[in-house]
Length: 386
Image (cartoon, rainbow, N blue to C red; front, side, top):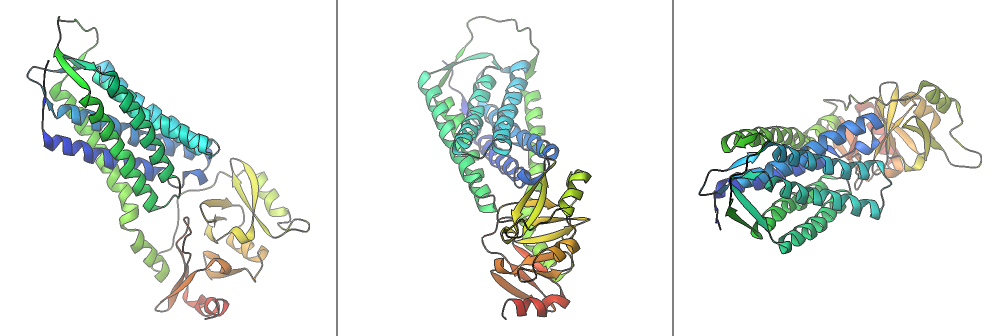
C-alpha cells in the first residue's frame, strides 16, 4: 500500500477555489427567473460552468496536493470527462430550479443531483490516475453519497429560500464546504497500491505538470469571474447612493423579448377587469399575464417599456412610464423621479439627500430604494405625511 503525503498550501488553495466557484455560480443564478427563456438558458450555462468547473478544479487541485512516491499520470479521457459530468449535473440541477415548478420535490431533486455531481465527478476523476491503483471502501462511497445529497439539498434550499445576498453567501459556504468535505471524506476511505502490471492505455495521458497548467487555467478563470460577480456586492451601496443623489440613473442592457402584437393587445385592453382591482400587464415567454397593482413595489422606465418590481422579482411591462402613470390610480402610485413610479403604500422609509431623497423598501428582495428627484421631494413628503 502507498501512503501519500500532502502539500497543505495546495489543500488550502483547493478550499478557496471551491468557495469562489460556489459564490460565482450561485450569484449568476440571481434574478434569472425574470429573464426571457433564451437569456435564462445562457445564464444557466454560465452558472453551470462556474459550479461544475469549480467542483472539478477543487478536486484536481487537491489531487495535485497529494505527493506519491512514484511518477503519476492521468488518463485524458477520464480527466476531461469528469469535468463535463460535473458541469452537466450542475446544469440539470439549475434547469430544475429555473424551468420546473418551484416545489419541495423539485428543490430536493435539484439538491441531490447537484450534490451527487460532486460524487460522480470525484470517482471518475480518481479513475484517471495512472501509476497507482485507488481502492475504494463501500463505507466511504456511502458516506460520500449521503453527505453530498444532504449538503446539496441544504445548499439549494438556503440559496433559494430568499434571493438576497445573505442567503447566497450562506448557500456558498454550504455548497463550497460540501465539495471539500465529500472529496476528503472519500479520500479517507480510499487506499492506494502500486499497479501489479503495466497496462498499455489507448487513451492519451496527461502528465502531472500539464494537469497543473490545466487546473491553474481553470482556477484563473474562476477567480476572474468571481471578481466580476463580487463587484455587484462590493459596489452595491455606492451605486444605490449615487442613484438616490441623482448622480447616475439606473439602466440595464436587458430588453424584453416582447411580441409586438401581444404588447399592443396589452395596451389596448382595460387593465381594470369587471368588478376587480387595477392590474398591471407583464410579458414572459411570449405570454401576457397580469398582477394586481397593489402588489407592485415600483415601476422603472426601461426605454419604451417599464420594469415592474414585485417583492421577489422584476417583470417586463409593455407600458411606458407615462402610460403607467396615466393608467394607475393617483392615490396609490406617485412619480418620484422621471424614471420611477412608486407605490406609496409599500414605502417603509424616506431619506433626505441634500436637495433630493430616496424611498426605501425594507424586506423587498428586488428593489432596496427608489430615487426621489429634487422637484418631487415635496410631493413625496406630503404623500407620506411628513
